[in-house]
Image 1 (tube, rainbow, N blue to C red):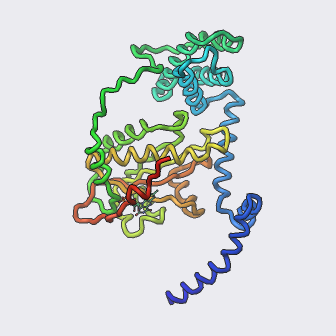
Image 2: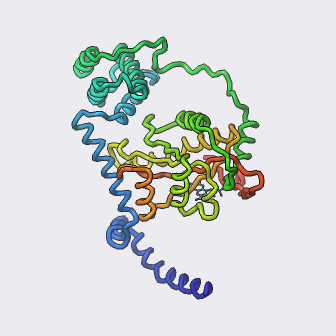
Length: 347
Ligand SMILES: Cc1cc2nc3c(=O)[nH]c(=O)nc-3n(C[C@H](O)[C@H](O)[C@H](O)COP(=O)(O)O)c2cc1C
């Protein structure tokens, strides 16, 4: 029976190959193929487009848009630290930034520290910008607008570009290499709870990772409720055989409304993956183990996870991460890595 199935598979492959060769030969034919013969990208199209729509709608309505604020404050920071610094810079986006800043400050932020911290950063960078930038009508107008926006806070430290005083790394390479080498994907965990404090610490380290324009277009959805873990752990395909003993699952979720243009759609995957790796290594430092879990784009599974996690269409799940205390009785794969010569090329 298995042999017969393999035979049918090889025949189907043979028939499919010339078809795929033809449709992959030009952009137009590929687009035609994915419009007519396959709906594999439709969900992504929809999420990217709805994300873009939400971003531009907020821009048009001058309403709350933390991603726009973060990106433009970041652009000002880069202008401030440029060598040599240009006399006049930021003209293209300063109005956009002031408007979104004003909109966010006018909201009731007193009780929302997470927003307030970002606005304090925006305030300090803007204040620095207006103190050094040269004269221009747009800048004068924005400066006047800025000076009328009242954001009450007290802080000794200004969140503006600074000189990084390198005191040497707190971790030496040999130790770090050992940490990376000791990490292995663990699929067998002890039935022992993972303290939330440790999870938060790992996420705090993750968020220090680089992110394009400092937007951080992702969030970590931590599932540690036993019933919910059971529900989520069986949704991805890669947990067959070990789903039952996973104590905590973290869903890494991207936000496509962070971008004004589809050219940046990959950043949810890049930024979230950089952060996830830092999270994985942080867990290792605490004695916890992890296993990344693939999130394939399969309609039925997409529907299930969206329902459990209450996700919106602008969201894409990037991957899941199983976290727990490794069971010393359980084995891990040897997972031979590629040698340096195969994976690295200079120039
Ligand atoms: C994006 C990603 C998805 C993965 N998906 C799964 C999965 O669904 N199931 C699983 O058991 N392991 C999964 N893994 C773990 C890999 O199999 C593992 O990282 C690889 O074999 C190397 O082994 P190591 O992590 O122990 O070094 C995934 C890893 C990554 C990075």
